[in-house]
Amino acid sequence: MFEYEGMQTAAALRSPDDRGDRGRGDLEHIGRNGAARSGSGTAGAGAGAGVRASDHVSAARAALDRITSLRSRVADMEATRVDTEGLPTADALAPLLPGGAIRAGGTYSVPESVLLAQTMLQAASAAGAWCAVVGVPSFGVEAAAAAGIDLDRLVLVPDPGDQWLAVTAALADVAQIVLTRPLGRVVPGDVARLSARLRQRGAALVALGSWPGADVTLRVTESHWSGIGQGHGYLTERRVTVTASGRAGAVRPTSTELLLPAADGSVRAAVPVAASAGARVLRPVAVAS
Image: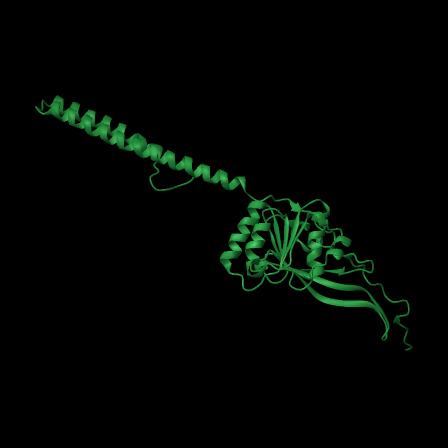
């Protein structure tokens, strides 16, 4: 139950009647003693009890109005609460995210890799969700289509200028995942307002760069390319280690190896490297005594 100024207990609301009863008892006592002023005292006590009862009724009505208003506000807040179910997520990213999914209303930071950030959009777009990309002119449309992102449900704003935050907030109204590159310093007030908007709309934000208070930050901590020889050949795939860390230590750092990209251009979990067949194997030998 909510508490606020003016609320009273049921016992307090009943107290005027009790006092009135006690008052009548006192008047009867005075009457039995033969007091000449008992009649006028009875009238005065009755009038005073009536005034006090009227005051308490008014206070109770005011309290009821406050309760009704507060219940209405709570109902409005509950109507816009976050859907706890996760958004469709690429299998390669599931081990890095709490619950194995991108959370509606969540904020995610990918400081360096455009391809990793693009992968955050892939599964949701393939499932029919609208996605938006703000302030990332290097975002490749052909590469996005090859990754399975539906271009018919993709909104691109390559150069929003100094209005990037307003554009990002506006697109959160229509897109389930918004990928944005922060341009300049992001103040805590703007972060709080945008986070509230994301929760209301059930959208997720992926920042290509640092983002204050991000729920999860994904960083490429190791990277190795394969395919090129001694001055010849072509790069075929990139094997990386991606480490996920949470806000203020809320999520224990987790790492996994990905092919980013694999030889066919996809992003997927990397198969552990087996020992080379030609590697030397050391075996224990008997030592003569």
